[in-house]
Length: 325
Image (cartoon, rainbow, N blue to C red; front, top):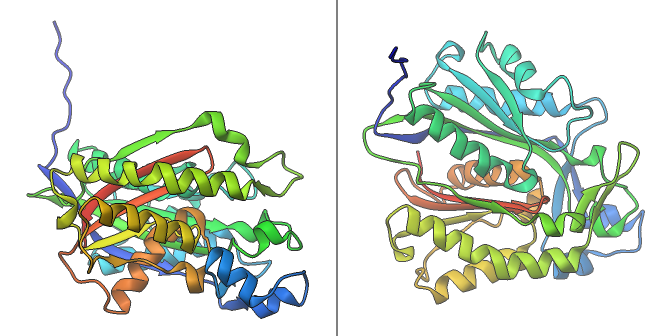
């Protein structure tokens, strides 16, 4: 029998660089109140958002992804030629082809590398991070650039109070590389396709629809167990987690999940990402954006153990434990 050769990889993988990008235009709750029936108090009470960033009409999703991705590569101390694959997690490209990743790779200077998009909506970054980790550990690629990028304003009705107050634009990125000791735990992931209608875009001429209360109930009851499963798969206790970075969907959801984690043994001094307050909900970009912002603000340190969990349309969910760069 003829044996086939397969690559072999390192014992583990880790995040070695981070980067992010947000558009310049800050939109406050007061700004929104000038065009729809809402107020700063109403928005803060329901979703916890004070400000969000909107891209200009001529600023493309790919533009934002390039900015975040290039920063992550530089932060990792690598050249574009060192990147062996590019994954862009997104659900808001203006058209299904060409994909974002090939364009982003070329503009960053990553030539001839495999590049593909991954659509798991707000869980997309965690899905892509798990995929990148597996690529590195299998020896398929030594360094993988993972980007979460969204231009949600292309798909949101600007006068729909249920969505226009929540969604925003931006991009966040991470570079995954080899490690002697695992720095990215196994991914806990899954889907609830029976709830597909709770968040959807009907067709190319429609806007995002979200059944807010149904999503809220699902997230506040079903996501904490996913986070705890990720901790279990990493072989640690929930008390070992220093930082909790959930998808920035809604501040009330974030606080509800954190409360459940503390009830299971998470520490009182657990650092919790609340980037949603000034960034809004940026779907697959929200976790890497929050990580980069927390690092810049000095809220987290290199070596901290962070629990990431993404969840959203699909419905899809994923989480993993990582050690911060």
